[in-house]
Image 1 (cartoon, rainbow, N blue to C red):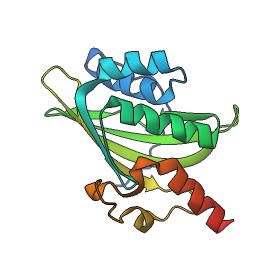
Image 2: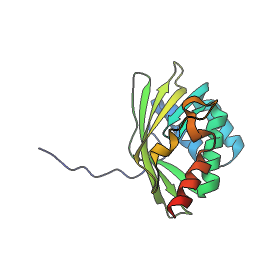
Image 3: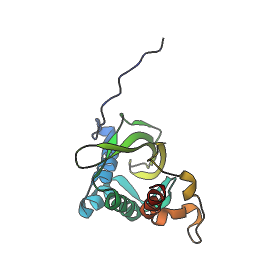
Image 4: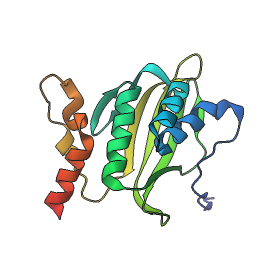
Length: 171
């Protein structure tokens, strides 16, 4: 009774009016220019959006922009692509994604799942990110140390620097 279904091709666009905010979210992660990032962040996120991942906790659109830009500065060309159509119910959405690196070659870097909470207007108020396939050399335990003044945030103040340190240790 089990069937094998072919894996859908990576997607960047989400069909249907209900998914407009989710499209803005994907576009935000793929936007290179700061004015475009700000426009997309204002459309997609609430003012106090919170992002929780193994690297730590980020609060506010500016923190997400800084994280995205530090990551892209460290990794070069990056693109977030959906692995399948998002699921949405009860003001929650689940997006399965992958990050591709490289100039047009689309080298897989990592894959994960984001669970988003949507407010009454459909804007994203929180994101919880899970890694389904971590980047090579990633040590999730390295990000759980408590830093004074940051609570659980750990090394999220400079996640790319923490990632770069791990890469140099494994090289």
